[in-house]
Amino acid sequence: MDNKYGFYALLDRMQYINRWALMRNSRYENIKEHSFDVAVIAESLAVIHNKLVSEGKAQIKVDPFEIQAYGLYHDCTEIITGDMPTPIKYRNDTLKAAYREVEHEAAESLSSQLPDYMQEYYMNLLAPDFSGEEGALKKRLVKSADRIAAYIKCIREKLAGNTEFDSAMATIKESIDKIDLPEVSIFMENFTPSFGLTLDQLNT
Image (cartoon, rainbow, N blue to C red; front, top):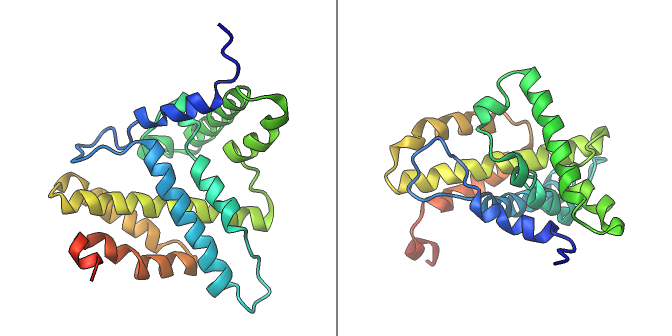
């Protein structure tokens, strides 16, 4: 049987890879739904950046749809590598460098499951070249969205009465507070409080 190209079938398997594997969850979150959350938040950070932060200033503007795509694909390599807990992944510079290399090889493996004319495009999404000032900003927006999505997960767990995430929530909030991006502060102030509301409260 000719399997043709397995790229999208592999991406579909993201739904089987759970995050927060070392923690007791009230509801497990897979990397497929997490990637959607990060994409939505990253796009919003880009819009906030363009409309409020850089408006009328000689600052870099970014394409929200491009940032959204980076967010959507930011964890796709975990189809091959699995979801490594953050404390281990970033334990020291040696581990960080080794994991980056593994991620790059995983991106190459995934992109090889596409026709030649699509490989370069998707390789840029799976392993972006965030060089230069603009690239650094794009990377920071996506990384910030990833942190915010993790914080929102902690809010959900807290609302479910799960104290397992109390420490993680405090640690992640502290890391978000240290991010020197006005976009992040604006999002946290204006949008995260709603995640603590009931459906009836949201509809009023």
